Length: 183
Image (cartoon, rainbow, N blue to C red; front, side, top):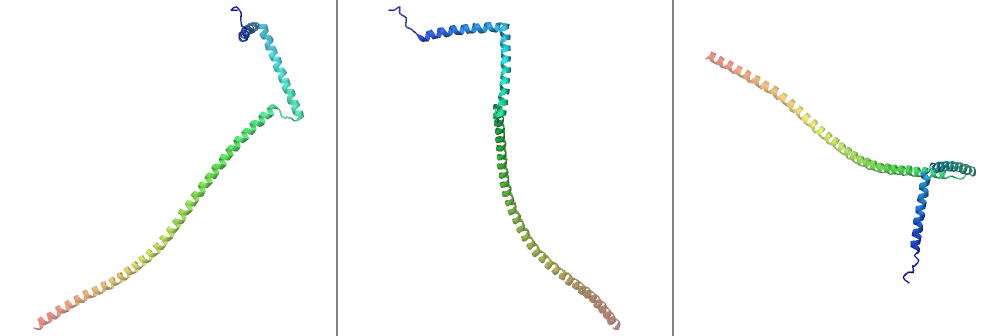
């Protein structure tokens, strides 16, 4: 009983596949080493390419006649849709940026308006203070004018007093001379 072999399908399958792979590789190698086989393969691939071009043209014409979209049409529309979505996204982002800048400018304008109103208040206050100070300056100026006039009057009085002193001194000297002469 030790001579009995059990059937192993995996080993059978493995040997079969190895032989098939070896034969396929040999056949491919013999074809690729054969110039005529390469020429025939080249010619057949050219024919197949022409046949595919004809088939695509016929499908295109049939689709145009039946007013059906082709694979190219769907691809083009998909590309256009993607481009449109990208442009819409860019426009949406621009709109958001514009809204943000408008809000910022509104805030700036309101702060500028506040600053301007504060400046106007300060200017009005300065004008009223300037008016008060100009009135004070006028009063001081008129007071100085009055002092100037009084000084002028005092100067003239002082000159008169000096002239009177001189006259008195002269008259006293004259009177003393007369007394000396009369004695």
